[in-house]
Length: 257
Length: 255
Image (tube, rainbow over all chains, first blue to last red; front, side):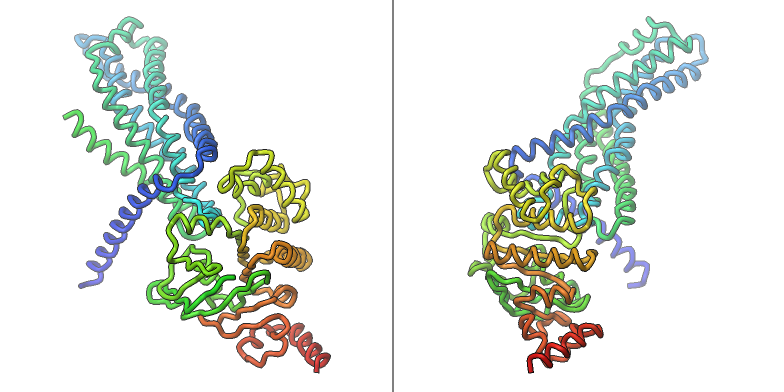
């Protein structure tokens, strides 16, 4: 076997090994649960850190991106035969189907994912995870399960992003003079398919699972010191984003085609 | 008492522990010493159950660790207190919360009972007013004392310390050594300390196990280490001129 084949094989084996370790981690996360009074506190803390702490940036981004989507849609409709209400329709479809669930999740992979990787990675480097293990505590359950439960509230964040994205579009539409309030309202009601909301929330729920577990995996199994914590955070962001984009493609193909 | 028989551990092709047999006695401070890379940390992590090993056995008061069910292992771990090299205090908790943590996890005590116990052990390690500080606000010596308080709060039968004096000034190191010795005597526990601080060896080494290249090269006590002719031990322990002089004086006085 030549050098390149050997290197490629080793690389692939490493990936397969990591995928196996990831799934074992997910299984172990549900085993040997931590005492409920302690777990309750951890879940509340993670809800505060991961959900409440993200509302500000999510609201800000959703509002202004909603506005930008509206402006760009309006500016690209230069045919007078195309009704103005399509601005609202296009904004709603973009926000509900893609922007809020998928691209907000990529942003959250940066914000929440890096936080999870660096906090768990620092615990690994400073032997805090070893301390939990020595005490006989299932450290995977103690550290990752509360994050997973906290992120089951992630669809709530995405609902806010959807709402504010559409409101941002409305504000841009009115203040920019691209369409009337009535046209915009008509647009966001036109051809409404309730299944699109279901599709968006199925995606959101799966992305929440990815957001909780992939960064945790990179933090928990990292080796080295402070520099490696930084590298693990970057790697975690890249892989979380890649998995979200791939899942998005697969789910869209499965649910909408 | 902890009994270790023919313990062997490898990482890939690297054979780290090559068959260690020894006993760590109850009510004594047992020190594992040896050069960096001699296998001390791997040995300690095997004792703690953090590493699996290929061959041999470790028994805690007659219970062979590898043969215990997961629940029994968990129960046994509740009897273990550990002081890590870097203290390993939980950053997000105050000092009092750190100390109460094992009680929260393993007992049914209410908050005031846990507070009382935390008060008691924090006073025991001479930190009566540190309850509400965060670990980052405490000095290295304070962090070590908090780690000791956390390790003993649940009345462990076994206390493990990984380089408890690393990064401390000599005076604080002696305070920590004495504290560990006092706690071992007071609670009659089996204490195992991983160290390469020769002051600790001379101060508190009631039993000393010397490791070299994954093997037990010597074992004895702080008294016998002065008299040993084992060159491997004397090369390591008396590598500094000061200790050479101390040994010479000791041997002349005790002719």
